[in-house]
Amino acid sequence: MNKIDKILLGMISILSVLILVFSFYKFDFSVLGNTQYANIFTSEKEEVLTPKVISILGKAELSYLGSTSERIQNIKLGVARINGTIVKPGEEFSFNKTMGPVLSADGFQEAKSFLNGEVVLGIGGGICQVSTILFESLVNAGLPISERHNHTFSVSYYTTGLDATVSQSGPDLKFINDTGYDIEIKGYITENNTALFEIYGVSDERVVSLSKAVVTNKTNTPLTQYEETSDIKKDGQCHNTPQGGYTARVLYNVLYKNGINKEQVFDSVYKPLGRTCYIYTDPLTGCNSTTLYSPKTGMKCE
Image (tube, rainbow, N blue to C red):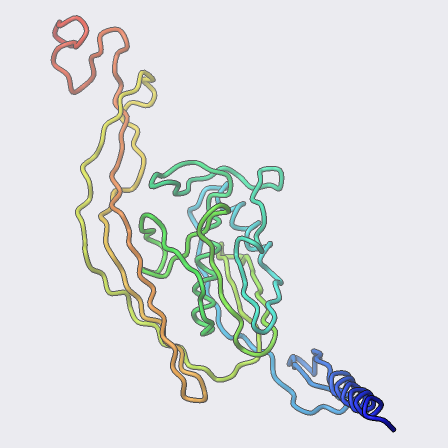
């Protein structure tokens, strides 16, 4: 046997061993009673080597009671799109990618949302409530967050410093599955008007600690702004909930079983938001409830 034949024979032997190793194991799920397991089987004996229990790693919920019907519809559709998502070991999850386009053709409604520092009506308003609940469930599961952004303005019914805004063309919510096993995201709409997310996977006994938000840099609530309107029906109508601005910091620590501790800092900067009210102005005289004399005729406003 010459030198080349020996080299070829050696390569064939190594390749055969690799094929045998990779075909020897396969990953599967089984259910025994009411308990779900992630098992590793041998292809020859089908012998269970290391059964791993599937459990809830983390969850979070938030009531949408009092929301408009349009917002509730958007929340339900958003939860349904995320429900059942499987994230493989080492894979990065993207909320925007998983959610996909938010279109009226798919049933999404027009509701209030934040856009470019203003409160406006937009298709899909309420989706950020879905992303916020999911974010809290991921944090409770101890998963590393690779992207998260706070809202422009604070939202009273969110946990301070733990909101997560998303936009199809902008901010995203992302996390990485570092558990070594598949993760499944399950979303529910409960009978008591609550949206809920549960994160299922194999626990590695990591311990999560989350600090309360430290609030600094508070700013006062802006004065009410008045906007003239020629529509008398709008006179006195106001929009926006006035609130001050502030900065919030939350510390997120995950202690792994091997003693490694990983910390993330969630910093949020919320801008102040003022109330805007309409005031009827007569289109002929230019008079309204704040003027004494007509800016057009100079006569006294009645």
